[in-house]
Image (cartoon, rainbow, N blue to C red; front, top):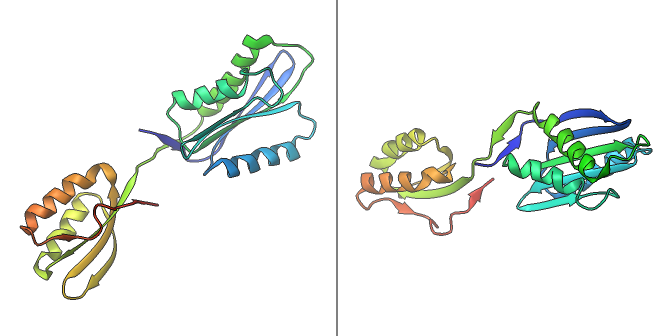
Length: 202
């Protein structure tokens, strides 16, 4: 199950006189990530490199920012992937100390900087939610509400007309079992509204 981060976390490593300032933080998308990187450059105008890696919204990015190809962004991205993170940006600001680290040394430095920051984070599971809506006869309303509560669903708008219409959201993995239970309880009286087109809820 993918996770995101509850809050940003930082790290700092000094390797052969080069200073590596790491940060891992939750971000929504690439646009948000690029703004963070621009802000880092503004905060560290004399830095040698600002390298970054992103996993968000199915998109990934690995930016070496002038370091030898594959020695910064890709190793950072591999750390995020290995920990099954989503919606996360890793950045490392490097101040060059005058001693070349070599390709292997750079990979280790960027990997370790991100890994050290991740040791301090609180991870939050990303639960895909599904929005559903059904209409039931009035005598079934109480039963439906109890089933929703038992399934961990969040009840939204309820409309009382000829029938009771209930909108709710619940973890996608729990939806099939709940739909089956309500169909059984309703003996064919539960009408699903746009069930086939049910979209993930925010």
